[in-house]
Image (cartoon, rainbow, N blue to C red; front, side, top):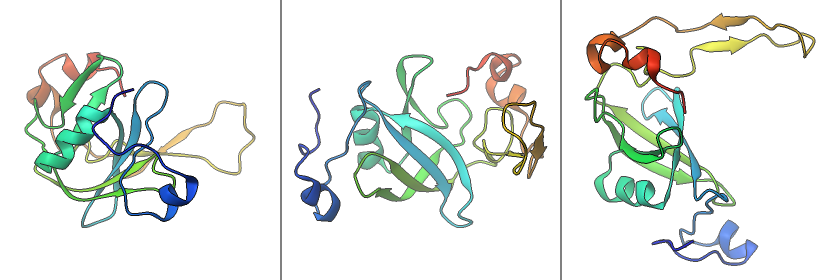
Length: 159
């Protein structure tokens, strides 16, 4: 895969060095965890290809690659809820990103919520049976039909 970023080096160079050499998976993607820069709340998880990553670095606005649509997308393109990147971090082996962002809108989730992580899984339950999710901070902060169109939120395939 051709990339605009530095080639991968030795384990020591990757883990202890100063050169940004992200590791994309077999599909050419790297996961990006998005968190609110001020509260620390995790807002979403999305995927970036090298083009989305390069655009995000250059513009300081979050760009992603939609696996379901097979194309690049800028967060906030439709909703206006742009994510301004305050800080971008890479994990120890450079195969996952953390974007600390400032939101230009009330929420990031296509369901109208502030975060895509609005339900908890019950713990200390036997795995394999029907687990019940608990809603946490699940209030809607915007109307997805008004922002994305009447059927857009219902038709959107989650990433």
